[in-house]
Length: 406
Ligand SMILES: Nc1nc2c(c(=O)[nH]1)N[C@H]1C(S)=C(S)[C@@H](COP(=O)(O)OP(=O)(O)OC[C@H]3O[C@@H](n4cnc5c(N)ncnc54)[C@H](O)[C@@H]3O)O[C@H]1N2
Ligand code: MOO
Image 1 (spheres, rainbow, N blue to C red):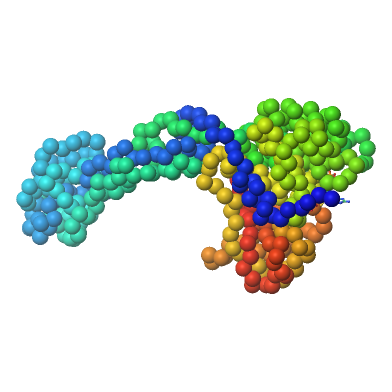
Image 2 (cartoon, rainbow, N blue to C red):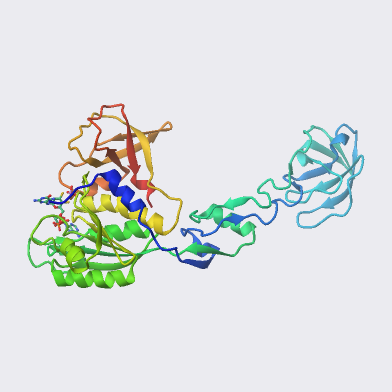
């Protein structure tokens, strides 16, 4: 009889896996979108470096605000440096993005003045320093602007560009080899020869999930339930990938060979085989020569839930990223019983109304762990801890936001 550990213990084991130092690569910034930056980015200068005008108007001395007229002594277009200084009762026509001329401290917008030849009359006053962007308004020299572990997105690209940084060091994404095992499962396009065969969805569901969450994929397709084929699958996959993920063949059936191969042929170090969760209780995680093996159950819903719970955190770990699973609180809108003493992950609908998350089960199908369609539309996983009881409408519950995974 196998020893089933609880969910919390299984996650601690995953968190404690020691990985080698991540490899980094240098990329041009827009090729690094979605990658994890390996070093802090520190501002090399103030932005702006000099007081800069935020509007089109006239640069003045604030003390002249009440003067009857101010003489326009120069024009100061953006991109050029005006040498003339603003002195008492003088002003310089200055534009959005122009440096504030020496001697000036305030900008009167064009709309606030009346122009008489080379003079202006201020019709509407402004406070001191109006429409002047101070030195370092956007960022200050030596400020840490992007922390290592951040995933590069559009805002990071913009900040890097403003720092004139064209290439950055990013973590090389882990490679995950994926295969579905089972003599009844057919790859796409494979000809069906009897009624007991079904189309494999798992290997492609997992490819989509891992690819969009930061892994390179080695798709190995479908492998029949046969010890030699499964052994050679693992041997190849372990050479090429950091993580090998399979589905099927981990429970108690006569043809559940994945576990036999991992334990007896590969002699991998078993971290656990069996967790008190629903779905996915037969999950097996092992290590072999610095590589990680994740053998998931065959059912489509079980393998997907377990891939989210165990493989995504491994990807985060390989990428040294500051990501974590998006688990938040929501209000449940109907009574919901606790059906087993395991930790249970149930697909539900999630909506966000007036700043609060709500969950219900409208349209969700009940049945076995084969029902992947429950993950369509706007799903979340309701998490019922092993020690929790029945839920009542209005209770605050933990949910994992599936649509926040990419
Ligand atoms: N006597 C017992 N039977 C079962 C137990 C148990 O404890 N005692 N556990 C059940 C649970 S829970 C699960 S989960 C499954 C896990 O079994 P396996 O991981 O060995 O998976 P398979 O038997 O290979 O497949 C299960 C199911 O999923 C379908 N499948 C398999 N691969 C794919 C694929 N690539 N794409 C789509 N669907 C797939 C397969 O046809 C089966 O229907 O064991 C229970 N049995
Ligand atoms: O362990 Mo299984 O509950 O059907 O995935």
